[in-house]
Length: 363
Ligand SMILES: Cc1ncc(COP(=O)(O)O)c(C=O)c1O
Image (tube, rainbow, N blue to C red; front, side, top):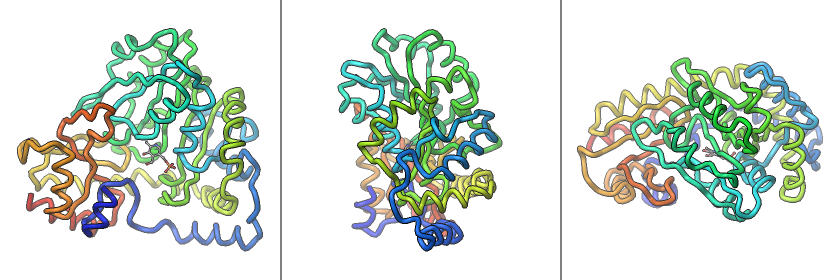
């Protein structure tokens, strides 16, 4: 859809990336790191100053202590961390439970390792996980469950009840968790992010994945990280060493310095909630129906009172005829399940969101 948006000159609310710049101060810090000569390979696990910052942040926010030496690894973005965690523990015929709609990189990585994807399809408007259904999917070959909260594309979050049910379900089972928490700070209305780091019995079996692309508004830098207990990190790094070896050095130094200001991440909910509210207010004037948005920078809508077209067809027509590009949510279901839901990204300048709403008012 981004390619189509570019071709048509449409307003691109499809792919998830900001259309405003990151902090000039961060750019300056990376610049300084380059000028100081931090231009050669970083250590395999990542620059220590950055790992220490992450240890501090995780302790402060979730009361969990991760050893920067043995339990934190800097990666070339969240996607690489997801791939590496999956390839570290999934072997042929291992089963992995995922919830659809799902971010697109989970299933291919599982299949590449010879694993079997067991997906549970969630339904709008609430996309809640039915843990009884999860229980039915668990077999003696289940090796991993992949969670993503706040969730792309549905903007839902895990609640304490979900955590309780998950904990009860996998107690005494050899099941790992891959917790994709790249939107951990994009959570609204005072809700708490239920990181796996908060729960010792879950933390001990979890790979927690995050991305500085989301945290610093720098999706093009492709730097992220993985938190995992020492034994899991040991396996993770066996793959990381030969897949990536070393991640961009000056960017790591720059981010390490930048994160010393806690407002960088503590201020994100307010920053994005303002965008969410502004965009939702605008969309409320249109004929689209809003789905809830608890977290992430995505807003989904249904359009049943506008047309009965398939979501993919309607998304293309919206881009071509009305000049607004979105993502059809069926793209996130392996079977292409279509609930007539479109996803907008609101990590955009206010004027971009206003212009998009002006166009959507004509639909
Ligand atoms: C849910 C989810 N996980 C992982 C990623 C990947 O993050 P990165 O861009 O750092 O590879 C994204 C990016 O959009 C995402 O939405």
